[in-house]
Image (cartoon, rainbow, N blue to C red; front, top):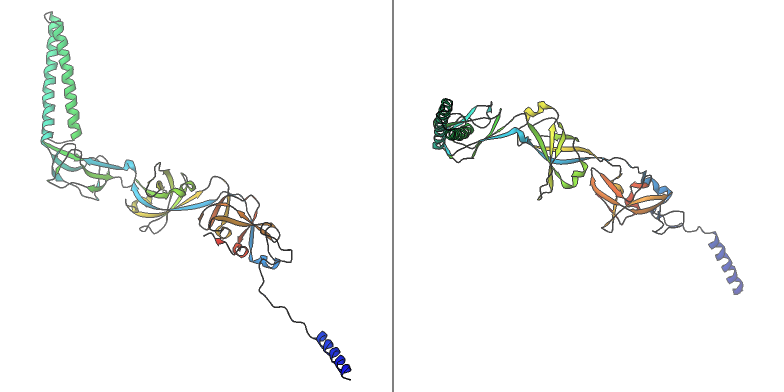
Length: 377
């Protein structure tokens, strides 16, 4: 009796277990690299599930001339030929200073007067040389007259001609020296402006003693201004002569347009910068500029050769030293590709090596494929 009861209990238990509801599987988060296809190793690539591809942006790349912009600090300066200086030709003392900084002057305007004993001596030398020249000319005329009458000697005529040439040379030299001094009388010299312009600097005061060669005044032509931008060494290959430039100046409400007229041949060794000279397109803007003003220059350059460019979101740094992108080798399969990239600029990176025309690159979402990499900013 007990045996039959155990058999019946076992049959009922097995039937109950067979009719029970099976356990549901755990709902785990979807893995971006999961796929219904057989798993790939890293050498073959990384397979991405079809439903996860919506999180990626894949673009076919093309070679093109990349337009870039270079920003640099700039300043307003006079052109080289627009600057002139007035100095003391001889040592002396300033009798008067007739102008001040900011004055607009015409060529020939008297800037100051200088008194010097050396000037008086030079002017007396002119008078002496003039007298000796007159005497030498009279001697030659007398010798020629005596030769015609047949009472003169040939050797005396030659000596008179030689003395005349020496006197002429001495007089010409003394006159040239006084011409360098400028106008004036006695020991006074008038220092005059050589060109029209604006007085930029005055290094003279009335009664001051000055040495020969001392620069007393600096003049500049008001409309002969230009901008000079200091461009870093790494940015020089992006720009060339005639490139367009946009300038922002605090004193001018609107951006000022210009173009590169020349690029300096030397570089500042300490800051690794090269001067780039910019001409202003609108001459009316020059009236609003003053030498020494600062500006921000944006140079619109264009590379002369075609190359590959990618957004910075496509480029990753692997193991802190290797630069890579992910290329789609087949639908849903991606492979890391080492590249040689330039510096990031305006959200774009130039790629020098590693990619070819038509490669399909992940431009957004690359970090979802490779979480161990770092985004190149």
